[in-house]
Amino acid sequence: MKTLSKTIQPITGCITLVSLLLGTVPVAHAQTSCAPTDDGTNPCPVVLRRPPQHPLSAMAEIGKAIFYDKSLSGSGKLSCASCHDPHNHYGPSGASSVFLGGSALSDEGKRTIPSLTYLERQPAFSIGPDDPASEGENAPVLPASTAAAAHGAKSATNTQSSATNLVPQGGLFWDGRADTLQQQARGPLYDPAEMASTPHKVLATLENAPYGEPLKQFAGPAGERSPAFLLDEAMFALARYQIEESSFHPYSSKFDDWLEGKDHFTAAEVRGYRLFNDPAKGNCAACHVDTVGRNRLPPLFTDHQYEALGIPRNKALKKTHDASYYDVGVCDQPADGRFPVGDYCGMFTTPTLRNAATRKVFFHNGVFHSLDDVMDFYVLRDLQPGRFYSRDSHGKVVLYDDIPKKYRKNVDVSDAPFDRKPGDKPALTEDERQAIIAFLKTLTDRKSD
Image (tube, rainbow, N blue to C red; front, side):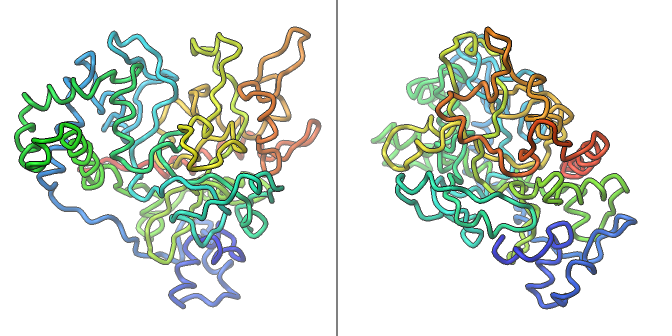
């Protein structure tokens, strides 16, 4: 995807790329003729290809029942929907940094609850080059000995310099430890600090639930012989629900309508969109890719890759009271030897920005609770570090205080706006930050009628 857009400015090429592929826009005029206009209209609309909408299959209906069934949890009071609120784009509705779960609903979850929307196109976890041509597919896995090579900076307008970077990409959860929705479902279901269930508890529930008998019919003789197979079928049903239910991937935002020429941006949104793509300003599109590909699928606003941003330690979480505790992100994957993740400790997945404006908690540890806080951190992290990080016993600010010292070298200090040094001017003014937030609000899915 990025390979084709390396010479195209994303602020002018989000639609331009599709037009170029279709042969409708001369290359020499692409950047000027398809730029967002001052009045907020899109001069180069495209018809997006959204997932088809059909009535749920019988298996997906079973999955829907499972998704809302609180009796599957150890406490009998939590369902998948308790954390992944369908009224807030299947993300958390509250402002708590992490959810309280467990058998008594008093245990802190390890990380912030991610949204379940837009996971249908998530590739499996891999480690390989930041190769735009393979984006959305599994990149080749390279040996750990080559992973520490110097990285080129990521730019919203030129991906050539970073194309050979070796990066973790894909997978589910903040650390990519699951490759499929079936695998993902087991995580919170059996986590003692979350739904706190057990396979025995789930099987007992299936025996009495209204959907239990239909599920057994789908599982057939294999399900009768093997409780493990029946559990697999239940997780498959849950995955089918998330794939088939259109509200998990509606692509119904103002931005999607703008892409198709059905809506226009305000002056603030236009300005924010341009700053979002400006490599010397927000540079947001370097990771939160906003381009439409050859397949005409709407952009996901993520490159599926992992970054170490040096997020501050969240002292509101009980576990951080232990000075030896650190969440090392992708290095928390099970040590099964599949991938050489050791060189990437402190990195977490880049989430989609779709519906980010409706969230009240951000990043893996939930340390920030508004987009204003997030934007301030991006712009001022290394200019005003005392605003974000703790101090040691001598009063010195501890940069990147939630990452062990030996992994702080992984923190991004080269990609704008993280390329500033003390004394530099911020990449974005306060007014410009607000403009980007105005644009981010265009990524909120509209409620269906």
